[in-house]
Amino acid sequence: MSDRILKKGTGWRLGWDKQATTYPILIGGENWAIELSKAEFADFCRLFEQLTITMNSMAEELMEEERIACEAESELLWLEVEGFPHAYSMRVILNRGRRCEGNWTAEVVRELYQEIQKLNTF
Image (tube, helix red, strand yellow):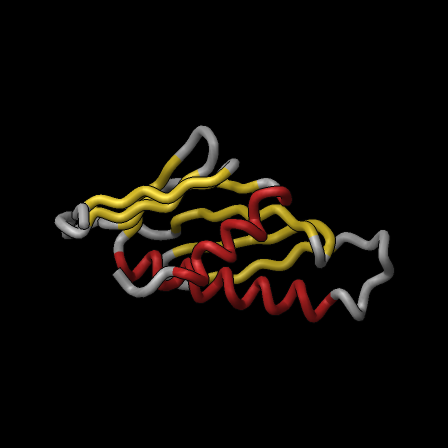
């Protein structure tokens, strides 16, 4: 098995380099990518999960045409989802050190979430 792995779908990329010590994980979209530390990626996964649960629970509370925006933040990064409970975009901003920002469209977020759920800790 290679020490470098890149998984990708339409509008998203996830990668990791087992030999990298500082930023071994890559998240990205169609035309952008950010390398993350293990701590940043752990926070990204945790916040992504929180926001997904929140959006799913809001489905019963909102009228069909209502949109919502929710955000979650750690010391390391900030995530925001915006849209409908069944289809929402997501934005990520790093809070510390490097200043990076990326986003995924509503068509991409569900597939990205499902792929992240398959991953184990690197």
